[in-house]
Amino acid sequence: MEGTDPVNKKLAVALSGGAVLVLALSGCTSGSGAVDDKLVSWAKQVCVAVQPQAKKIAAASAAIQKETSDNSTPEQVQKTDSQAFRDMADAYRAIGAAVEKAGAPDVGNGATKQKNAVQELNGIATAYGDLQKQVDGLDTKDQAKFADGLKGIATKLDTLSKSGNDALKELEAGDVGEAMSQQASCKAASASASPTAG
Image (cartoon, rainbow, N blue to C red):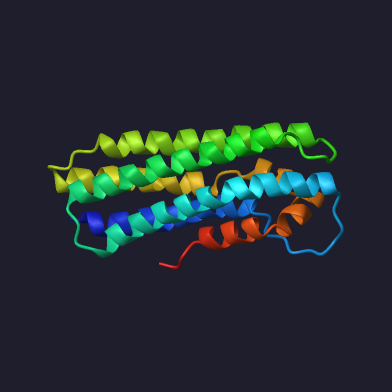
């Protein structure tokens, strides 16, 4: 019988894929082009808001990974995973709110790109919220059932981490990405969200 440990490792691997979503918002493109002042101030506002959320997502991912390396009880795994999913849901919702608050970037189709990115971020937040409910509903008394339940969650998480951040990529294409890449806070956010190997 597969215990919870290898299953939670799958969760950790799937979760590290989720950190890639934050990278998309962190303007990882490096460039040195001149960018319009309005865009620079838009990027600054978004990047400053993203940085603490990127740290929160990285910490949640690390908590799940740590729980896989210990011989944790199902109760400990459940508690850690539940908290991590809640933190991730909150973080993505906060990033969505920051993008919404910043307004549309001053680029072609800026309003549409912004709206789509906010919807996408809120969708991701909702998905993590659902995962939290699922983890909370698992039976910790029966290790085999618990491991099976975690497997289902790992599969959903994997799908979530591979699913689109197309709207985010679209939002930060071209000049927006250029402006974001010039922000120190975005560079810090992308560094803290980089998935750790494991």
